[in-house]
Image 1: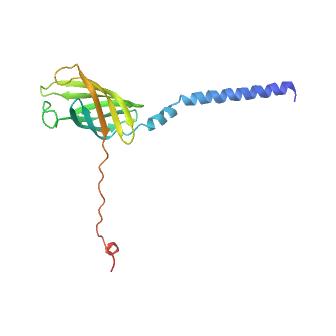
Image 2: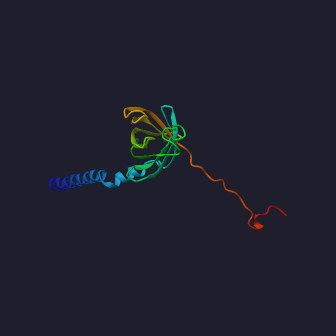
Image 3: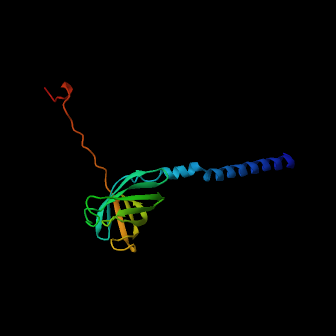
Length: 173
């Protein structure tokens, strides 16, 4: 093969490799790749057992969007009579990778609204757990804070029952 033909083939191969690399880089930055990452987000919806600085309650995540935003409520009323009655407090947050953040809005017994900002990590071993810290209203000032944890509770299942519906359900003669 002549030198001219060889160099032409090498240029074509080199150009083909450059195009392949460019296509690969373009694909890596495409929305398709980020959608795959979003599809791997854990399902936060459900009831969680929440604990923080001597208080506990139920964290209920009621909705979760594909972008990682979620909302629900946190019900500490059983352990904090200052909130009064069976009142819940609303939360809105976002999960990205293993980072979880949410804001809790509390209407206190004086009628004023206060906030707590939670930030932590989501870990998944045998169960989903959140561990982190919060800052904000602590019952007496807006400068409170502490650690918190929450564990997702298993979904309640309804046992199946068998009812006789006809001759085929009978046992033996």
